[in-house]
Image (tube, rainbow, N blue to C red; front, side, top):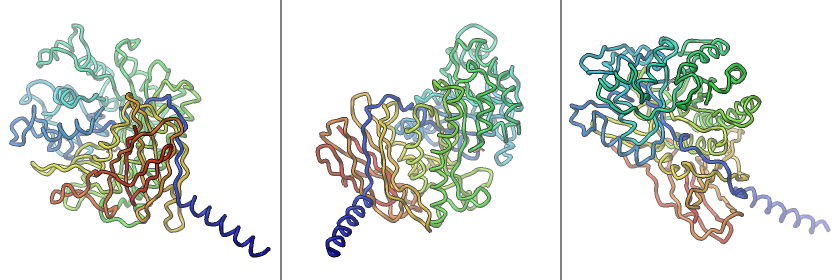
Length: 512
Ligand code: AHR
């Protein structure tokens, strides 16, 4: 009798061990909500070498360029399918006077970039240069307005200068400066981080300021359908979101922002490349916190806007570490490792999951700043692991999100746990399904069983981004150390797929 119960225990035990050793994903949903391509947006601030010596090298540069913007960067960002670009800040936005950046370049006044390194800028990259560049990139501009050191009139005039097709003083000035037709510029931010660098305002004060600025952005009834984004909460400041939702009329606001960065500790961010597993764990834990943030901010928004007409706009996110040795501390130049690839993969999966509310997001920042997709050194340029994740994931842009049930092992470090596997799925307009999977565990492979109950699967292919260590990165000496490869560890068996994810990897499957 005793013997029998012992063997039963063994069988049950090994059954539990087998199921525990495997991640299960069930897709049972046929999908209703579209993943807005704008959650794949980027951010370009006048900060360090993002604009000057990043995007923009000037018309006279020996580096091949179009109107001063590097051709290699244009090609790379187009390949990545950059759908939106936020400019000119960040903190810089509330010091920027657009009028200084138009007209003949030799007549433009210079300015001191007081937030970022105190450098003097000559305003050679202004509205025309930015908006023309967006056209070259086939990307949607997202303009960040100055409400702290600017005026209501200044912001209203900027919108008119950029978007107006009728005859008026601002469109006349634009034409005089060489641009006949207005640009397409639908998205406008009303200040940036109004709780901090954008004026240290209280939410109550900002809500009143917002109402004033938003009234005159576009015409009274917003017939031009400008999309106005209120400066949102710092991380978990739920009172901020509540106050804006309560005090700003629905007809004045199309989006509310949220900023959240991933770091080890704000006061001690550590190196971008030389980090311990403990620092890795802490950074990823903070990245995964985005899920709770979106859930909690959305719950507040739901109270005032149950139909989800107002978007949650995560217009700054990404990893933030110490600057690289020998670089200007005010320039925020950091390398980009497989840790950043993990942050990108899990964060985009979170945005997909909340696609009904998160409809815009902007990774900070595109070139040479924070979690950049591109790094440059004079004429040389490298694509970071983060670039590759965004390029691999671009198949989800504007596809329909498929809800899934995920039960995963944990990644355990020092007695603390995080879910090891993160996943999301979508179906594109041609019926092709894409599944993106991230294994954040730097030490263990993960076996995944993926069931799709709603579709017949005929074939599967995949791409993988992985490297030996999470500290690995692409350098100017080894620019292709990390790049996507064909993924072979997937077996299709009628209604299910068996996948083996390498440690610290990102995989995107294409299922037909
Ligand atoms: O992205 C760098 C800075 O971080 C931005 O200027 C600001 O909005 C945020 O605090």
